[in-house]
Amino acid sequence: MSLQFLSDDTGNKTAVVIPIAEWEHILDTHDDLKKMAKPAQKVKKIKPSDFKNIFTKEESVEFQDYLTKVRKEWE
Image (cartoon, rainbow, N blue to C red; front, top):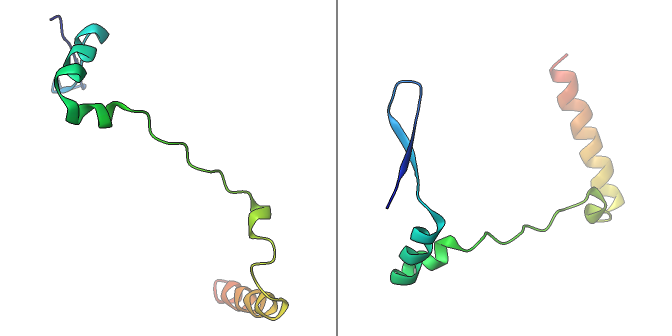
């Protein structure tokens, strides 16, 4: 197996690169690694419009008043 080592500016090894065929062989022989090798699931992107109408009108006014008060404290 031909490994390649990556190192930082001071020469400390920080990572290793192995040929893909070797990686696939390792995955085939170690079931617990198969779970880690799967790509992460995509996270649903949240849009600002997803938050529409989560506050009542009164809560919105109260929140705006609070923000105004807090901003004035920083002036």
